[in-house]
Every structure is written in structure tokens, then in C-alpha cells.
Image 1 (cartoon, helix red, strand yellow):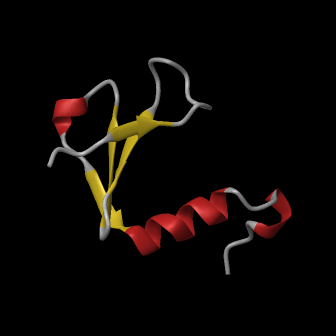
Image 2: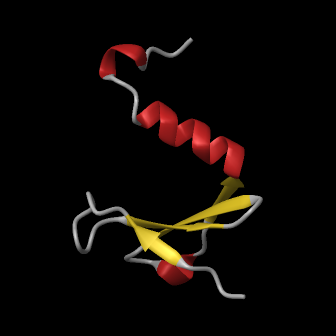
Length: 63
């Protein structure tokens, strides 16, 4: 089954990344270079990243 790609509503129309979610992995690609390949990570790592990015600025200190 082909991946379903989606992009953030916060992104510009032409400058953004797309994300495809699957049960075990998340794929990320550049909309300007879709054929250049994808970055792939575990869903657990993706969830940690998106939670961190959504945290208030004062809590983004690297430990």
C-alpha cells in the first residue's frame, strides 16, 4: 500500500516537508525534491521530537 503523505498547515505552499505515518516508522521528505529520498525514523522517536518541538521555549534546554 502506498504511503499517504501530508504536510503541516503551518508550512508555506512550496517550502515544506511532508510526513508519512506507518505503524512502526515515519518517513519525512522535502516537497521540492520528492524523488531525492526520505528520512525514516521510528514512531517513538518521531513522537518524542514532535512533543519537544511543541514544548514551551523555556523547557527546550538540552540536558
